[in-house]
Image (cartoon, rainbow, N blue to C red):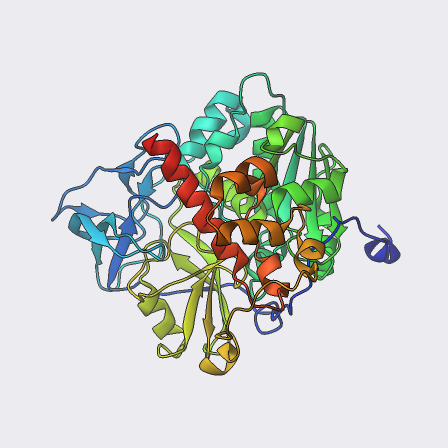
Length: 450
């Protein structure tokens, strides 16, 4: 590989935006391990689908890595004890970033308990059949670590009649502030490639492409240097642009294929996984362990010690912020990135499997965000920004008169994945993305009650 190849013209999608990256404070910092909180809170629903069902009772002792909840259905995953300790409560309702409370298992951590995983069942993935690999992935409790939190084993079983020939690995990490995937690609390259090998075997896929934005060329170089000779895996740099990491857009950037409206990647023979998901699978499946911790970027001007931390699942947000000496009186705390993440009103929420970042904003960073909303001036900035070529202006006007059905039927509301690009560029400060979320929720409720 020549040095010049890293800087060739990269593929991309049309439209999109270029928000300030704010990655410099954490991109160069190695992953550090966070200590245990005295009390851990493990929600039974941390993923898409049905909640897990508790296997433990109050007063029961558990060891780090032990299964504490089993899947509640096919689209569901087990939970594992993030610490060694004693179960304090089962089914206790705890706050979530989304608002409604959810049942959880509360564990009191034993003082001075070790970080060593005490529950595992090692195995050789190379000896497992594709069906056994799918079950092994399910046993890890793995979900998509890029934020969607969709159970990983479900994606290994494509719909009937769909053949997966290509696996796309998402290493774009296009959200501002977040650098956890960048560090995983640099520090856990071998584990990531081992995970890709397993997924390709389970799906019967012949090829894999790892897509990385060109602001992380050190990761591209590291991955290319370790690519296995016996598999058709390549790593490609793509243009740094938001939302390059959206799976449908990344597919287009890397392959030129387009997922049809209302469709999924499997419709065109592709499965998409996050680099962090692959690294965890490459580590957990051979060891026979469950997902009990993940890398989380903690950043923002309200954080004194920003970085990428290996955080036990179930760690209370308040404890995490105390460890990094964050200003808990700051204006806003966002779980995930600032574009698609969710602001939380409570510091008592737990870090779950889908939390890739915690961004703490100070009051000075929020100046001007409370500007009044003005009427649409028909400038078309939102049309130029929308990566799916929708008409956010018209959708916004229809939302204003609550014509939600027309938004869906005529203007493809459900194709919108709420990236926030339209809201970001709107000079009238119209909260278009929030309007679209409300419209989708109303339409879902209408169908459910019909």
